Image (cartoon, rainbow, N blue to C red; front, side, top):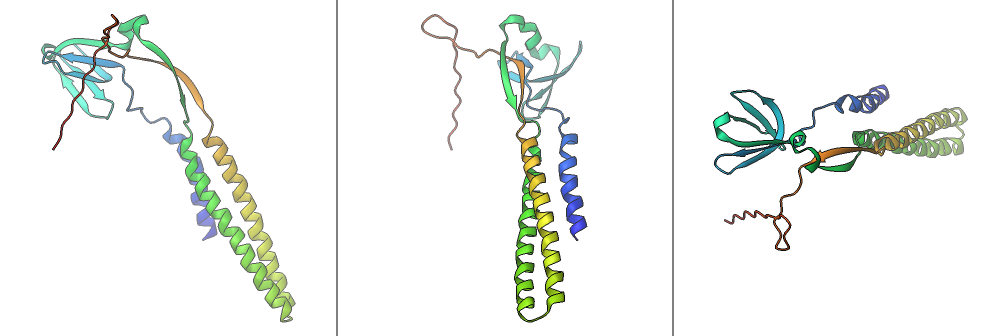
Length: 192
């Protein structure tokens, strides 16, 4: 049973980095202005002479024909008008699962060690010295497993909290201000 738990913990520590290369669904690099006035923002998947495919930030796929599109704006086409921002991300945050699992194992091992020490004391009082020594050995092993799990949990927490900063371009905010600066605000409210 313990070997299965150790194997599961090891898999939870090793497998999250493989998941880090999953495609980022939330990126917005394109705005599609349609002839009906609708604006679709998302990631440009394909652009050809007869078809434009865009994935929105929530993962929905939109397909447009050129006659439906009034204007197609990408971050690259904006050039210097695109805002550059710095984003701090925690790409290894999934290691927190390993931290929780290893902390739980550590706590269980220390609890087991305490129980074995209590049993060893009872056996020693009753004159069963061989059984008391055996229980003390098991308690020592449980403490060793507990400290090992605690150290691995701390390491997993340290990896989870490694930040990564990167710069990316974003669309400027639309605005039409009374002071002369551009500013527009669109509010949609729906009540039941």
